[in-house]
Image 1: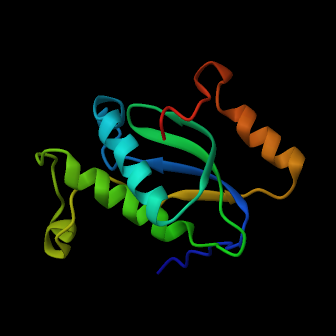
Image 2: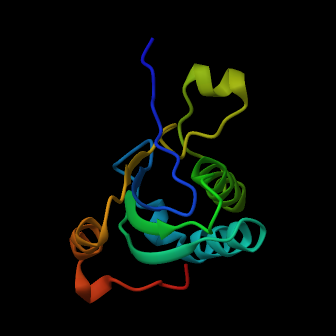
Length: 139
């Protein structure tokens, strides 16, 4: 079994990549209003700052800064993913393992994160998101 190691830094900044399970779909751009709502709802209960974001049809990249003393980005992603999933119509293909667990087949189960180490690292990751679409997009 693979062991996943997360680097929880309270009040830290993080770069994330979050993917759809089926990378051929374009649910994130087709349902961007629902994605915005999921971000807003989660941020109300668990504050964070979106420093940069790009939403592509099948995945998104985002830089977040968490509040001082808070390192719980995993809960935020769980809430965003589940809120978004509940807001769009069912119809995606679902594997047997997901079906048994009562999961939708929208998101990859995991996400990739990088802990921002310093100001230069922060700038590099923000610059990774194209300037023409680097905005909070209401997220």
